[in-house]
Length: 292
Ligand code: GUN
Image (cartoon, rainbow, N blue to C red; front, side, top):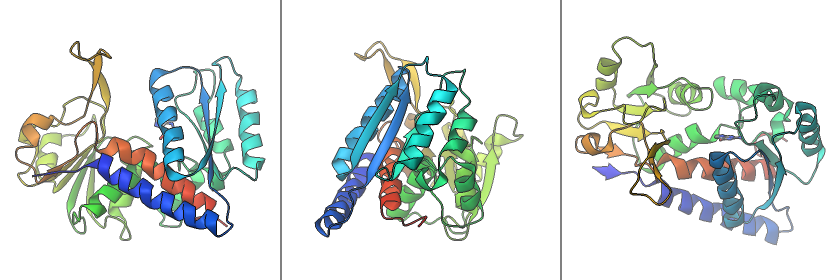
């Protein structure tokens, strides 16, 4: 049984990105520049954004963090987006989600210039990806695809069960896995109202669990030898930890790891790849590789 090491894979890819950035800069090119907008003081968002800034440093990127209190109005935030759209030095930027309730995440996402949308959340990128055109692909699905590739896990023709249908993981993951140029798999998307969910899972060669239900996938749902990708990161109380919580995946690692052929741990599996793929998208934005 292989433990798919997302932390090591992400570190290797970030080192490759750094090498390329060094080469670009040595040849007189522009250092990629990522900006991140953080509204409010949500604990999870603070951690994510801090890690994104650190990843920029590791990759040799320039980074800018714009912080706002959660009293910022939607109009003010939209003005900030417009300013970032117009700033020629900024290659790509993200607005960390979730946003406060009085701000429409959809309006903000759609205000971002799709050519700078390194999160791949803008409808233009989502749509272009879905029809196989060059696009920024959202980081979590791209990270999973990259892990499967780097671990030489065959996806062509395989049965893939995706649990969860969110806009940022389940749906784009299904699109990528079904497309000839990416997964080339047979895809089933399962969700809270799926009938025979357990049975569908048992038939899958690859299970991608992304519904945010701690330890939902148990051994009886997994075909022996299947590959299991765990996207869940729910904070569950843990009095033995200094923080008072630990991250629990959507997979019951204990029971499932003994019968699958490969599995991603939580933490250290999909999570580190997500930020790494944001860096890769930023490099592509800097190189004008997706859009001229
Ligand atoms: N919140 C949780 N994940 C993400 C992400 O990948 N991008 C942004 N912008 N916000 C998030």
